[in-house]
Amino acid sequence: MTLKEILRKTFDNGYNFAFLDEGAKREIRRKILKAVAIPGYQTPFGSRELPIARGWGTGGLQITLSIIGTGDTLKVIDQGCDGSVNAVNIKKFIGRVTGVKTTTDTNKASIIQTRHRVPEEIMTEDQILILQVPYPEALRTVEPEETETRRMHAEADYSRMWLYLYEDIVRFGEISIGARYPVAVNGRYIMDPSPIPRWDIPKLDRADTLYLFGAGREKRIYAVPPHTEVKPLEFEDYLFRVEDFGDARCRRCGSCDTFLDEIIDDETGKRFYQCSDTDYCDRRTVDGTGS
Amino acid sequence: MKSGEDHQTVSLLTQNIFRLLLDAISRPGRIYEINPAAVGEWDCPVPGVFGNGDSFLLPVLMTLLDKEVSFYVTGNKGTVQEMAEITGAHASVVRDADFVLVPHEAKSKVILEAKRGALQYPDEGATIIFCVERVCEGIENRPCIRLKGPSIADMQRLSITGIDPETFAHLMLINGAFPLGVDSFFVDMEGRVAAIPRSTTIEEVKEWAT
Image 1 (cartoon, rainbow over the protein chains, first blue to last red):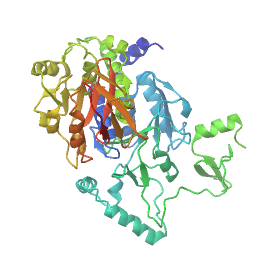
Image 2: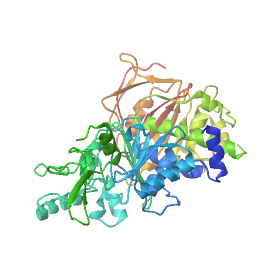
Image 3: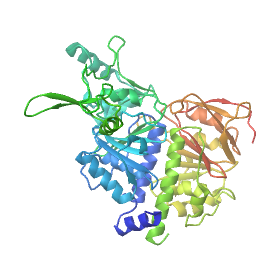
Image 4: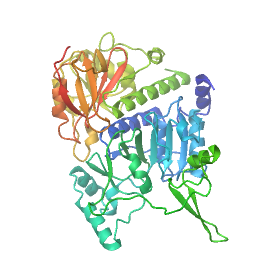
């Protein structure tokens, strides 16, 4: 499709390019620039109404719509999967209001919107990963009031978070947080990395890629710029570790170095493991690199 | 910009420029270029508010400014009215301005008064846009600044000409208490753009050639 046809098509549909009006995009863009300039800080923004419900990826969607252009190639995943209903519908929607190319191949995408996973493939500096965030405030577990958590971030007063982690160790023998593991960004802000598994936390640290986080319902945008230190909170004697799958391998591609989903067969009760990143798994299966 | 199609064209151009600004602020000190052909298609007057050679500034302003924000222009007061009309943004005093524009060769001392945000809302710190003669990758033994900090793998050299040499000392002072501070974009006469966000430390300023 030529540029003119895309323009004609989106205009004939009655929508602006990328659905949002220009004023909304400008505001979101200004906030994204501030978020990148202050790594890990939650920038408030005027979250707009969209044709999907709040809590279904509207924060990520607004970031994607504000940054996407006709030259981009889009991939959308939900828990690592290109084929889940939420991912497919978000991808269709963005495709319809922008005319951009879409893909499932991580290497071919310039923009990837994701819910709860970072792709297994190491992303490059030409790519942007946009994470959907349900609860942007990492301190919410220890403090219910927004004005107070804002004060705590302002003063870098994180003692209650550390105390919470200490109490967790006392109770369970280790830090029991799975997804949403709190991290320190650039040695300053404690940040909620969204409900990605621990497995993905090391991928945020000093990456080549820009990570943008959008919480639509909570009206917050934050960012981890490239080459920025992201450290999971840990104690010297209780170090952070990622999930351990033991000897489990993916039943499709045989991988033992990827994040695996546990699947239980309803009838036989048998447990299987399978890569959570479906694109990575598919490509390993096709090129025969799997076993 | 009356018909829908022109509106859409502007929409795509500002998207293009925004991505460039996003790249620039994500990778401080690296040079990104506005495509002159894209700006040539811009279907609205480019008055060259700051004199000849600043035709790349307007697209940047159109991308960032609108009626929700305020701006301040150092030096040349004649441009304020025109700026307000074009962008829809309103003029204000420097200490309240969301955007501060420092025209080519203007003294930059006034940026010391720009908003640095509050500890609870550091994002309220101003964005400073400097119109300069030229930005380029810094070369060793030439006057340049060395940038360090998050977003920079090791160290980044940047050379800027046509700017008040005091600017970098001012920026170091303003951005000395992270997360408070200002974020700066440098737009040159040929459409090259570089950024220095507040998180970046300006490490060394060698002798400056203007």
